[in-house]
Image 1: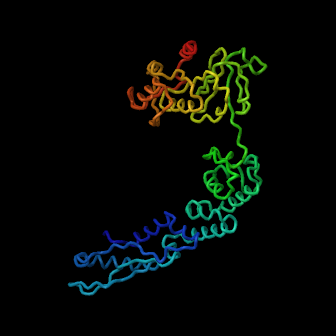
Image 2: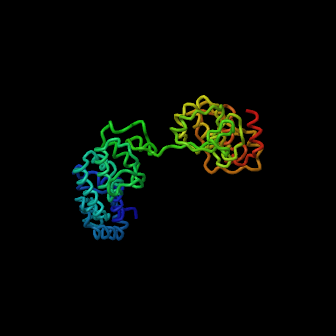
Image 3: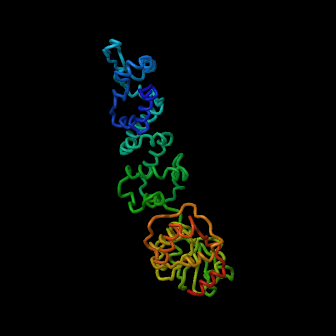
Length: 391
């Protein structure tokens, strides 16, 4: 049967709920009701040929009426005579619609959120109207969120760690788990001078609103014993904050960056050099380290599309970076150790050399096989020493 059923009518109302259409008008006191639902019934021919089915369909619709109202129309059929059939279906009130899909309680919660927001933070009513279902997910936490916004308005750009906020129910995990929505709300509720608009994304949350962020750190090893920083003969592995590393007076001329921790720890001695332990995508800890611009930089990553994409990203900060052991010759020399790259990169990379770009294209097009990769930890240290000797 292709005629509208009570389940179809319920589905129409549920779709309105899923799109936020039943909740959003509540913010401004507007209403969609009375609301006419889509009704598809039998045509004149079906009324004759399938009269028993039509009668059952009418009975089914009529039995479920209550949340919706049926408007009847009398059809004068040349064979069957006058017959009343459903012509329109209406829902007269929000309460009837909510009752049909079992959402009265949720609607009441949203009404409470509207009332509290209108009293405490009316600037957020717009957000409730735009994101009503997302707002409902936050119903339990909403009073605390409003309290946090009020506190931040009275303590603009507080200069403390999130952990130091002294509000009931507000803790670091609470803020971190709601960073995305809090950014939307803070941007609406706080004065513009309290927001650093250059800090974007959840990673920039603290800087955007004036909180202290966890200090970024740089982990490195001095590879030349004559350039030791620590007054000991032990391995010169050091971890400094980004600010401390930026102030480092390193007299060497070479800096290597590698992604594999064992390669970092076992990197052989190199005159006038250090090695930095990388962290895959993202080089926030190296951004702003001006003295690296004057050093010879070498990046050693996996030979796969992601390794080349990370190299491409690093060159955004340091365009003069050279790659180390990330070439087709090295890849082909270790053919027996190839593995499969789970999710290759396919985007265009604009900061690779011609040779690197050719390698990238061959990898993403599967010239040597599908999703080929060579992890840097597979490469022997004798191969590394030979490459270093050629620099």
